[in-house]
Amino acid sequence: MNVKPRFEFKYIVNTQLAEKFLHKLKGNMMVDPFADKGGYHVNSIYLDTPDLYCYYSKVDGEKVRYKLRVRWYGEILKESELEKTTLFVEIKNRNNDEIFKNRVKLPGKYLIGIAENGFPLKKLSQFVNEKDLWQANIIQNIVNQNNWLPMCVTSYYRRPYLWPYDRDVRVTIDNNLRVQNVKNILQVSQENGSQVLPADLCVLEIKFNWAMPLWLLESCVEAGLEMRRYSKYASCMEKLYPEYTVRSSRFQELLPIV
Image (cartoon, rainbow, N blue to C red; front, side):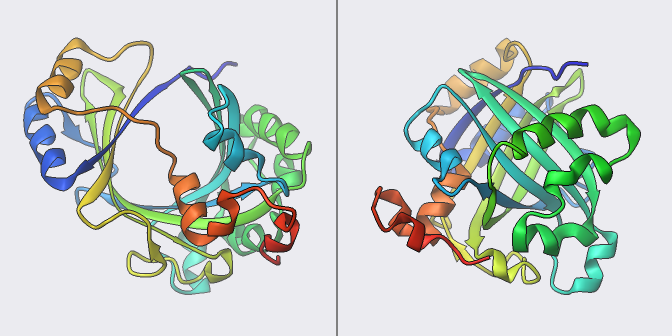
């Protein structure tokens, strides 16, 4: 079973330009049905190797790279809320401009363990249902090749839109990008953590399989969008651990204690 390749175009824009672009999409796109109030909070624990492979492969512009994260939706302010939370363990691979994502579900009760030491990622196949087993094996094989450390928690508010005729065509607008230490895993909300982007900026992403529809491409040109490379993970690491932006002999001393 194969995972479809995806393409992602990212734009860092001010909120006024984002709203102008959304106005151009009116009549073609619809709000994602999962966003029952127009949007939702997206949170991720990003994990990395002791030498920060994921971070440096991004900032160095490696054409083939991957990252490991555990994602969930909604705020968490106390341990009892984990019972109604679903986690998504993801390996996101990039091969030049193509994106491939492997994803499996885990119960929310494992979130604290993942934040502390990455458990149960190295035994992932034991904790997923049978239909996700092939994806879990792919993720676990990558996980087992390295020692992974939980590095940071990222959060933002996402407004997602999709094209009704091809729901793989998506436009998302992410506001209020924030980062905090994994030790604060039970304090993940829209107010906590350090703000990464200025309040008047947002991340606009366009995602699709194979090719962007011509009408959407024309809307990007008319709105004056300028595509740029951007990584939420890299930006959040630089905000939380500014020492990581420079390679240093002190590197190991700077790693968070887990």
